[in-house]
Length: 121
Ligand SMILES: [Zn+2]
Image (cartoon, rainbow, N blue to C red; front, side, top):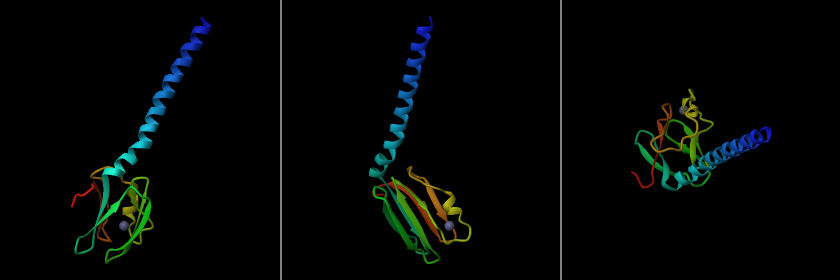
């Protein structure tokens, strides 16, 4: 009886670990899959200049919007505002965005970052 309980527990733990491992693998692989079909679109300044930013390579971008020079960081298929010179820093609080239609906005710098499908104008 005691031995049966041991094996039941062991199998239970193995199943839990397998499910958790599968979820972790799914989460780890998903940003890569998204990065191949999604890109960030930065719209900035009074002229609504559009800049397309690839998400499949880690990089930093410094963009003079005409109000502030904003800094965007791309990492593992996600993008965010970093070290923003704006007074409110609300843009930094958006954190990493990587899913389609997610946005991060810096009002003082007149800059909007949106995740879109590649080739969307
Ligand atoms: Zn800001």
